[in-house]
Image 1 (spheres, rainbow, N blue to C red):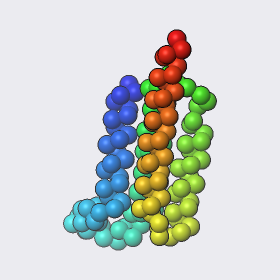
Image 2: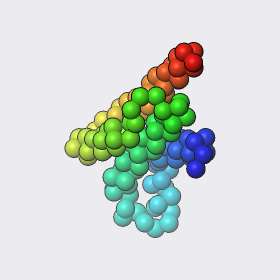
Image 3: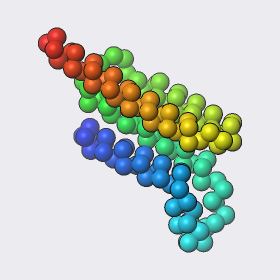
Image 4: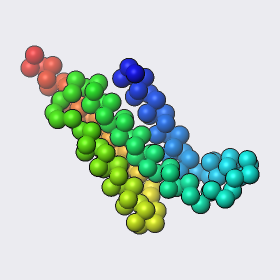
Length: 124
């Protein structure tokens, strides 16, 4: 998959997952179809999906930037698992804060990658 398409898909998926995590939209949809029994378990799936989507965004940004530095794939996997485990352990008490921090971390990483790519192009 082309990196632009992959980035766009990951951003849209992360945004939809975030909307489903922090609004009752998915609860209404699931209840409307008659599957209200799974509403209590939605967060156990949605937050790992959100962190995985943000990880895909970070990895794709690294690919687009020309791969400066070591491959972040293992770090991204560990962070997604650690953030998901942290939320489960805290029983989703700080879910919004942790999710916003993860999104800001990806944004800071994107800025760092842009700066690294810009400085590499100046050298060449």
